[in-house]
Image 1 (cartoon, protein in one colour):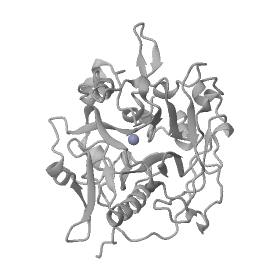
Image 2: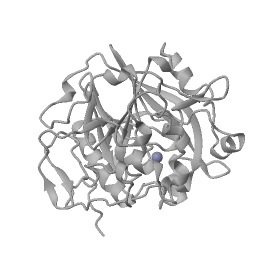
Image 3: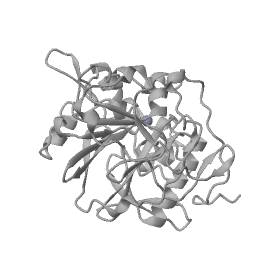
Image 4: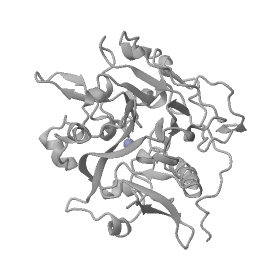
Length: 373
Ligand SMILES: [Zn+2]
């Protein structure tokens, strides 16, 4: 039987219709599966190709959700994100941008859950399990340093774990974690201007809050704008029984207080600021976003849980956690198609050893990761 070519372009794609939401959470773009990774000019919905919107309200500060009410924070006056424009090339800017991978913590997850239908003898070659079948995982965040801004992508596991949980997840060194990693760059959490959350699973949003000396949870990044897809924000507050264990509402319900940092809920594809684009994908969970940007002429994509490790590039290598595994396959192919043809560098959030890699094809035409030295 002939395997389908991994980089084949896709036909029609059905729109996603997750279960109903409270009215205040319904996003106008939630039924459209946008996919416009390389600045091409169309997207998908249930009727097939549709032309790009001319001036979409791609991002907006949160006002629809009563939990993210209007703030008086001075950061509300920061420049609002610009609507996505397929004709504009954000890749021309930011020659002085620095890209720094930050190891927030290491932990372990069941290898079978991480590789779905792949038999253990295959995944164990590249990701050897421990005595409890756990494979090594990194909680890797990304620092984007511009001359005038500090941007952080994801916040890792954070510090709020019981001894029992630390044992279950084999959590290591997270107490020093992100604060120490930032200090190594001569930064504090207060220096961070923007926090982009790929999604709100606990190993991505766990570092959003930190207990103070009295044990009261405070925002870890009090001066930062926080960005997440509206669809993921909605889903995280009302997940399915299958994925409820991956969301801890106390991680991200921090925006109600009068002095809370601002939260921006993003609707679909958007350039947030300074050429940093977000591309929503829905196979892993609804409303996750891949972050794509350019530095010194090189395109990068922080692929989060779409491709969690360098061992997850091939089609069937999809996590058992994913809500829509076939959607993950489609979305992964689309990313890899562009990454291989256009020389993108992928940044892996969970690979224990490989932070960044290019994509090449092996002699069978299958995608492989080529780690950067
Ligand atoms: Zn996840």
